[in-house]
Image 1: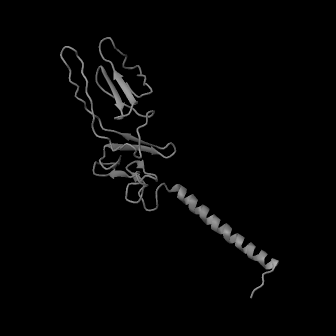
Image 2 (image 1 turned 180 degrees about the horizontal axis):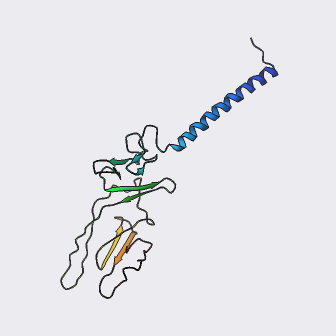
Image 3 (image 1 turned 90 degrees about the vertical axis):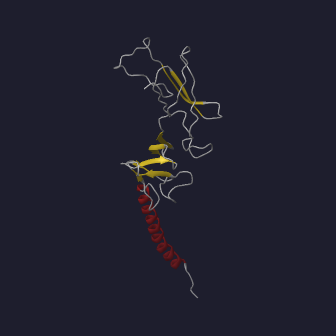
Length: 195
C-alpha cells in the first residue's frame, strides 16, 4: 500500500499540470487549424468560384439538414452552384456573417393580353416555387431583393401566395413624355427597380 504525503501529492500535481497544458495546447492547435477549414473534413468546399462553408454542403453528410446545395458541372465551366436539385436558383454568394445566400432566379416571361381600345391588361405568373417551401430553411428577404423588369408601362409585384405583404414591386414608364438623358444615372428605389 502506498501512502501519499503532501510532498508526493505536490509532485503528482506538478506533473499533471504540464500534461494538462500540453493537452490544452493541442486542442488550441486543432481549433486554429479548424478555423482555416470552412467545411467538414473530407467535404468539398468550392463549386466553381463560390465557396461552400459548413453548414452548407454539396455531397451527402456534408451539410446540416436543409442546407444541401447542388454543384452541377454539366452546365459548362465553371460548375454552377444552386439551391435544391432543379438548378432554378443559382447561388452566386453566401455569407455566414449575415446569414444570407444570394441567388439569381430565372427570367420569367409573362404574356399580358392587350386590348385594342384600353391599351392595358393583366397577367399573372404562378409558376414554380423556386425550390423555396413555406416553413423551409430559406425565405425571400424583403430588404435585399432586386426585381428587374423590362418593357414599357408595366407594374409588377413580387408576392408570397396567401400572405398579406409585398416583397418587392417595380414600375416602368415609357413614352415621349418620359424622356431621359442616357448619360444620367437612374435612381434605384429601396425596393430594387428601374435599372
